[in-house]
Length: 204
Image (tube, rainbow, N blue to C red; front, side, top):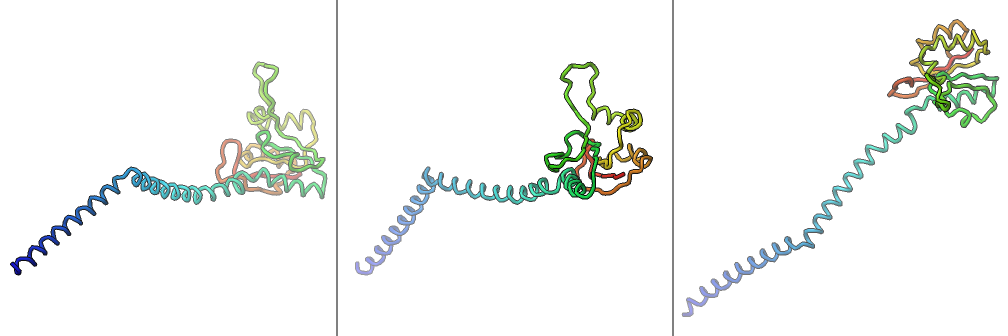
């Protein structure tokens, strides 16, 4: 009997050990399946994903924001600064041959300088076949320039500012009237329509 006792003890210990491991495993499973624990894990996972998304958005949007704020379409603003500086040295009479309201105009210069741009008033009087000045100009640039300065005898401006996409259309008028290119300002890497990649300035 004394020899059998240790064997029984060992069996009891092993049985107890196996039972204990089963209880622990069962307890872990219950904890993992607990709704609160599951919700906490899900929340932590979503929080990690949100942090990653925010970092990606920051890294991709900051360069884009800097580009569009500081570089894209800057030409029409830089040209006004140049004209402001020029006006302190000489009297200027400036004609902007570009879509109306392309530049900040007097809101940037704050000086008594003669400036003119192509107007685009709406057809408030419901005139049949109405076209604003900008539309008439872009239909036939040469004809508009001849009408304004040869027929109506308006005085020629000291400076003409326009987008580079217009150059081939008005280069003959510029050369015939003694205008020479005095500056070029970068405007956009993505030119479209009547707005070009550069703003050009010719001076008489």
